[in-house]
Image (tube, rainbow, N blue to C red; front, side):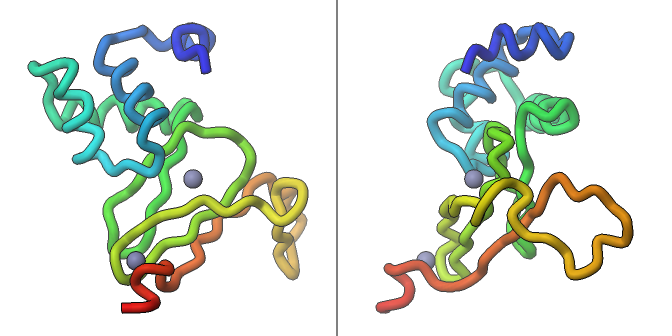
Length: 135
Ligand SMILES: [Zn+2]
Ligand SMILES: [Zn+2]
């Protein structure tokens, strides 16, 4: 993904921290802010956790990054792909995996859409990952 072009098209300035956040998410999707901060800090020692949060919030607001909020866990972030994929979350160790949308996004229709035109479905499947299942 060409982040420079993406940011420009959204009229967002290309700051070193912003770029480092996006690159961090490319390499480690489903990262929480604290982990991203560590990744960014390796490149830019002067950064702060607040700067990482501010950038994440802006990127989520502008639709470049997707925020997933599993109950009882810190938010995790990934580059938005608009594929409406869902997540499997392990109750044991917090392991998070992608799982594809069943069909064409949005893949699950409400039993009564109340006249809404639904364009996104957000599902978290909870359970135990293979490792935690056997222990
Ligand atoms: Zn697990
Ligand atoms: Zn994902």
